[in-house]
Length: 284
Image (tube, rainbow, N blue to C red; front, top):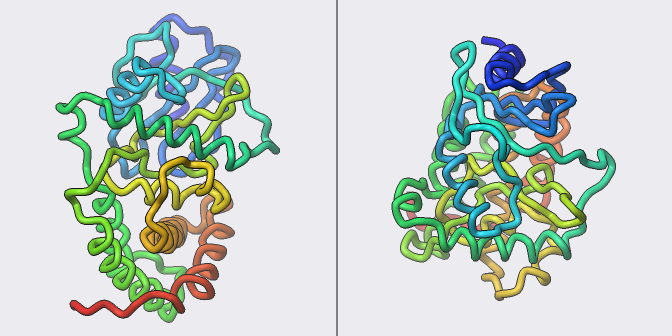
């Protein structure tokens, strides 16, 4: 199952002339610019096989004028199949490889995204998972001795203990009844600059949860530009858990690309800045 072949095959069946499929940065599925067109193919090869849900969310957000990158306008907005793999098509917007959007611009865009997500159809919202589902997967990796084989046992134990303490805080500070629809992972790699404005991509992670969970994926300087006041301790716990999550997911695939650098950075951050300030849980 070759994602490049799948993308080209489906694109050519739709009448596109593709000279080259250029890989773009992706930490889950394969994302390819179909050069020289203005179209990106997303090929489902990762664990989050939610391309159909992502497409539905993106279509509704585009109709609402949300700050997002939309599906390719001149191709059928559906999940295609090629070489046994699912493929969707999106607008391509070239990016400055060295550029990062300033947090004071991303935060207001995230607020606009949240307002649009609050307006998606009730039927679609009812299908969204809670952000805790991803954390359950993270916990399963930590508890599976066959996973994270490159992670020293002492570091695994540190991540397990910190995860459990933060989980208790999150459940107490953000009960399920207070959850909103959020992006789920609006980190820097999921923000593009289009016509000089931040726009979000990758809606496979859309879920329900506290807005603090989304803010935890942004630069800390973004908080004061978001708008509504956020819960200080909840935001801190979300940031800590986001770092635990990233450490675990990167250690799970540590030999691919630059994931080892991210794995080691987040592990050090948890060890030095998160674990010492967590509160021991009062329940097992």
